[in-house]
Image (cartoon, rainbow over all chains, first blue to last red; front, top):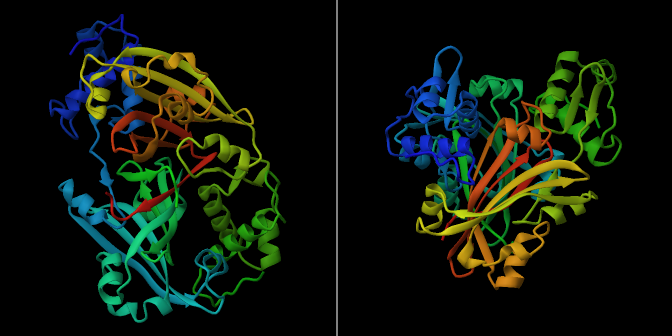
Length: 242
Length: 242
């Protein structure tokens, strides 16, 4: 792999592509130190500025991690989730052991905002389930799910540290077909920082939305936060929304 | 609206809901200063710590903005995009004037990684279109689109500052049905910071993916970055991916 200085692709981006290739073919392995700026600069005959630009780009993309005084390392691949509640499968595919901790389970009168979102009366009660999801004991996601009690009476009798949608399906005969999600990013709150053991400037992906049954009935409301350095969200988006 | 100290909902979260309500019903308006921690603490009879927790939470959620020495303000609502390439419509719905600047248009030999993604041969050429999208002259998104030249010959003759998918449809008879997207978040690169006029710690939403035609053929590859303080992505996600 060589640089082509006459190519319309900027040199720093060509270098980025070369480094990415070396990560993909296993020459540079997950968690390993890559060559220094000086070494790249000498072996490719380009300025250290250009090398730095390539590495900065890859750090921002989450492909590399820079540690002060130690050097630049290949980032661990993110967990790529492809479906609702397949967090565990996605982690296993990456060779990680998923675990789920139920932080809170409560049955309470629905709050005004959730009542509005789910079309409930202010007299209705909901289960509020808060869970922490980890991969190889590294906290990755915080989930908060609101389920109307009348749709799933006695939900407390089940082990909620597995797939919630499986319990809903097997025990209540309710199948979730799709979710209308809002996807945002922002920095963590103090509580999120603590629970996710995240630093202040790690961006979080915030995915919140309503789940719908196969009959297009609203079922639950969920708001999840994911450490964006650990997690990528895969979604097939249709141009025509029904 | 009152606080209920016996409620299972934490007091800080109840205060958050009250403030959110006041934003929704227009009592606190976009861009306006809200009461101080001391004022909230006195009028609700709660500690300043609890008030601060509520405000911090809302700052992290992007509902409030804190400016050092000035106070806490209601954040402008984010642009909520519901469909592929409806950035302009989404901005207009919010009462903002969208604009698009073509930063770069090039025809070049396809790079190895894009060839692999789109299933092209290394001899193929692609158009690379880089655009900056703004709302009321505030930069919101950077888009980079890769389109095989043989699918859209002479694309350069069109005005590319409008909807790309409309041109593709009207001039080449190609209809895009869906995209397989990867959604991530991270901090900006130096170039992104400059083009998006973003500060270093503004998280960016990174949405990249392949578009497919109504015949399930791969069409283009696109990678976009959005300022997460300006933008939220809405998507209907189906549990069963075809």
